Image (cartoon, rainbow, N blue to C red; front, side):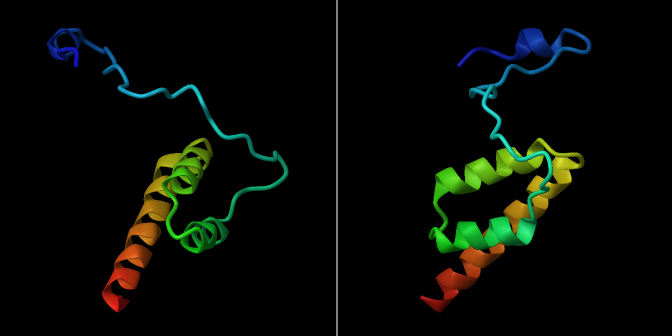
Length: 87
C-alpha cells in the first residue's frame, strides 16, 4: 500500500481510494429507491454482500446519500444481529 504522508502534507488534497469507485449502479430517474424495500431484498438474499454493496452504492448516489447509506447499513446490521441471536 502506498504511503499517505505526501497527501497529508498537501493542503486540500484528497486521499486516494483503495478500490474502484467508477461503477455506480443505474436507477430509473422516475423512481426513488425505498430503503425498506432494499432492506427486504438484502434480508431475503440472506445478506448477500453483492446485493448489499449495490444498494449502498445506489443510495450513496442520491441526494443525502451518505445519510441514506448509513441508515440502510444500520438496518442491515441490526437485522443480521437479530437473526444471529435466534440461531
